[in-house]
Length: 218
Image 1 (tube, rainbow, N blue to C red):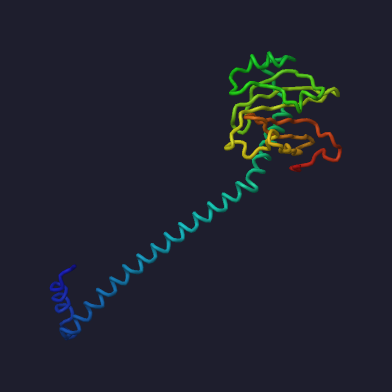
Image 2: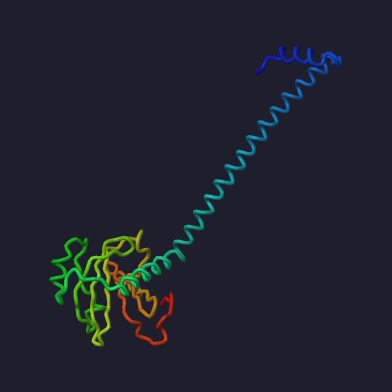
């Protein structure tokens, strides 16, 4: 605490002409100390209010983010997958291997964390395997198989190792879930999960009224 004597003497010297009494000088000192204490109190209170507001804001953000993930967030992931697959399907690139044999595909793509296979949803259809190439899906290494329908349309089939951080809550057909179907730029994009593998199928929309439909999900 500052010594009162120097301050008292300074006040005496500066204000001698006004003939302040000892009592008035003491009152001035008390006012100064009270004002300083009040400023400290207000500053501490402002900091407390700011901290409380910051904590409340962060809590609200986490609540909103949590709700987003479990409601619309997962839908947005599937929309992003559909957009990425649509771009890959429309921009045909050279195959890493041209073959009609899945055994040759499995032997060739040894860099994958899973053995490539044709889902029963595909093998039951009369599609001809043309070959495959490495690609990515949501930043994860993936396989693109290129097939051809009896009418000559190109069908692309993607497989990647499932991870919830990349693919969200993908419908699991093994658990009885129905695959998600999204329409983009005249294509029908089907997304599902079998075991530990995410599968995406891109083909020309089979229903005329769905050609060009954007973002419809069933």
